[in-house]
Image (cartoon, rainbow, N blue to C red):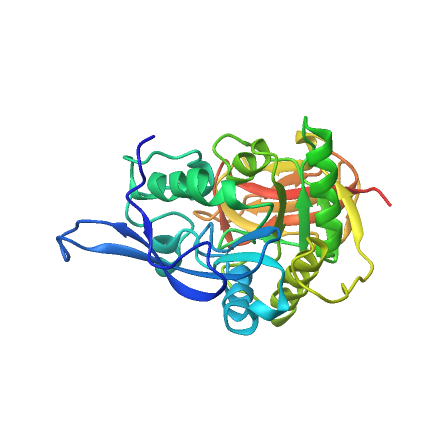
Length: 330
């Protein structure tokens, strides 16, 4: 097996609390023998399950990085049994640039798995997680939100899987995360997803969409922190009692949940997140940007349900996702 060029600067298997980096050599104009230094913390206490916790898979999503940074300074080895691997900024180049994809190679880390040891920077990061970190993990939490282009009701998510034992374990962990909403998530395209890589290994996965707009709120960060603690307790790693509050269960059964835009223009939302909509109801209007006196195009819901996601910027382009409708299952 070809080895990864990425090397950890700290031990991954020793008891105690270790802060360091995943060092990826990267020769560039301003540093011929330079490296990309991805921060990592490993906290271990004896034998037990391993949790792999990641944020900023997309670099403009911030609830995860904040919650995970706090965990690196508050979690003590004495608090746990097992191991917690924390990578607050998974796609570190994108995180530093505040962009969804890497400014180095335009790589979308969440479409790059299983990666390549001799590929682009993004592919090398994916390869290292695929071959070195994921095999260590029993449970994985990967934090997402809408970034600069989408906004979501705050939810934890799990997927329908062929392996029903893994599926049940993922849904149990999603329930433990206990976000205000819990979604049976349908992916537009699962090829290359980190989620798919985790699930194909039979690992337990919790993913999230906790907000959006390229920032975070006190409420969305609090949801991330509470959910993180709950999942670690659920996994048998952290001692304590879970905090469980009411959650609304939602399903995305098929592609009819998505409303896509076919025009460029000025985006006018007609429904706010969390509101109920009916099939055929206009959820947004698209106004022209280059002239007046023209009626807008209406975008209509294909199913009845609740608005769980919407386009965020004021301008929209043809092909953009304008809205997502979820079906309440409780």
